[in-house]
Length: 477
Image 1 (cartoon, one colour):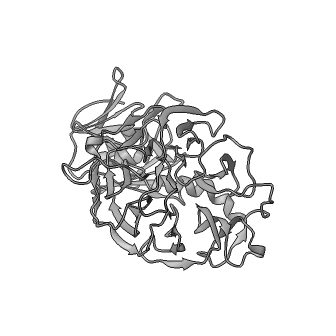
Image 2 (cartoon, rainbow, N blue to C red):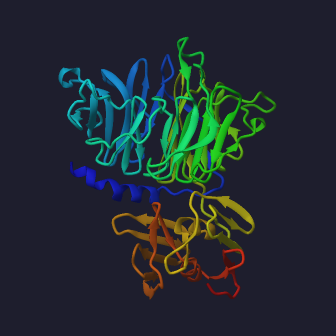
Image 3 (spheres, one colour):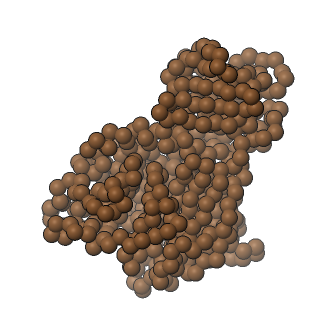
């Protein structure tokens, strides 16, 4: 199909556009947007369009405006779903009007009005994917415990890359096209950084627990894992505040102190039932008494505003432009919008980027980010454009058609094109010694050119491997 070819370009542009920095996020209160007698066991939000879904015993609901309003989608059987660019979603199950009520993988490009079989219906000897997970331009499928990968939207699948993964929502997550996290049948958490060629046991056990009160007796709630590039959260529902975070793609993990995992001041520590994460350090955890949120990569947590009926047993979030949309499921679906922190408004005296570290500092205050500065092939230090702009109080926009980054501060406008050594400052063209590049979906460039254009100087501390940007000081980089 023609839209398959849009995968990589759209994904890179989307990730580049939806960049977030550390700082104070603005949010209102969770509001009930969909009344359900029972919680929606599965929530979804598209990273590309306004599509959102909620699945419960009452059926599958669809929203075309990111969860504000909902309508019924008369699905006959449902396993899971995933998203593609251009308003397309994939459904594992049996859609309305399917030939012979055949369980298979289907796609819809018109909000569920019509469905097309992505591949020939699966035979009785081949399992249908019960869980679908977006992994960059790839698609992961859990076929009853065995994980396979598709690079063509589910038309064809590779051989199994690992066995024994719990076939439940939240037990498989992908940070990007090659970094996956899986909860195994023995409750252990495993990670791969090479697309499934090799897997490592993290040493973490995420046990099961009886389902929360809203569910039938005899069912179980499994551990969950959620990930974006450079940030992962794993939790266990079998104990109090058994929640772990990783900032290095699963190589190391930190257990969250249960004393900080409370809904009310002086209250008991909460048990986490579900989790979701967004770029820039936002993380959410659902508990029996509400939602806890962290804006600093899981280091500290506070209760989100909202009056929930019942336990919060699933959370989904997605970013679009300057907003992160969050859906939470209790007895009904609740919705909350987060606004991206405003860029630095006052002129900083000193900004530092340390080579290889996923953070930067402004006047000594450290901001966590999800990507690090690096050395290119010519031994030049490249810093992420978005976070450089935020640090210097520069407005940054991305033109995906022209592959152009535009930075604006006061009367100064700077334009850079990915792959081009030209920099345009207020219409005047100058030459860079290294072209801006995209790495892991983000634009990078040497800091000196942007900083000098708005009145800063840049130096390099070789001992600490730090790019230092100062006001009214002399220096070279």
